[in-house]
Length: 412
Image (tube, rainbow, N blue to C red; front, side, top):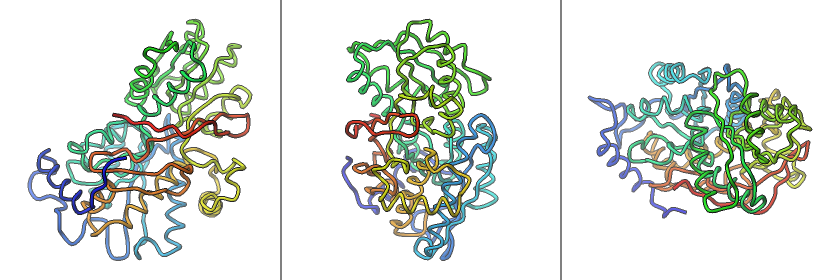
């Protein structure tokens, strides 16, 4: 855990970082430290924005926005944050970087949002990162595990991720395989972008010196219609373990294809594709039985959480404000915990400014709603990774059962 600093000290460090990095527009900045307020926040309202792939190859991520809206509705019904109601403006980015940048510009320049929150997907979040940092607009709790969002707070002081970064998650799977399958022959299917490459950057180095060997790697593009040929090649390479560093659509294809081939490898599935509804049901629950993933949030279907207060509040809010969303969808659960962390950050702001918000975001130590017991969202001036711990979970054909202890990790 990082050394804790006061938010005032972190705000001062942010101003220094902005100056040193040359961030901000030429001419007068949209916000300057110490001013009375920032765009998108008044005594009665906080206006947030985000883009999500309501359409396109990663449309499963749209669930994020629906869960966030349900959470904001619950908060607003209880009086908002310090008397301010939250408005959440979202636009469809189609999982396309160019479209996402255009939509983000619209939210900032036309709609005047206080911050961009929770945008779903790596390509769009990477594409908008420079723009938001140049304009001193918080890119808050990005729904992507790419390590870029926490690795360089001096260069990108306005960006911060949320979920365990993919490098850390990759290391966690490597640690599990070395312990449980020390002679595994691994075939990897990965998305050919920052998402897949970050997973590889954590997974492969962590296997060095062990008996676990990668016998083949196959990549795909998000525009590919199918990954059937890649899965077939991994089987032919002699892999007895299939590792999927993918998004849900392609994970479902891969799981179904290995089943159709009569191949029965150990399956390791990244957390972003672990949804029973979005991935496992389309693939076939029998085909998915026994696969493992890593989790950091409470599963409302797990009997051990049946009396949990967080779970009860979550289920009631989703029933009222997002009845079309499967409550065990990982994206819904991630978004809920993400929004809880955002709410705590807003409460901790010392002034109604973007600088104060980011200072609070870089000084967190909270047990956000729906996180597994023992997992907290923690940050510091040089630590932009709120979550860096997960627990292995195995799919039993209906839900996930947690296994072992919480595994701590780090991207650095």
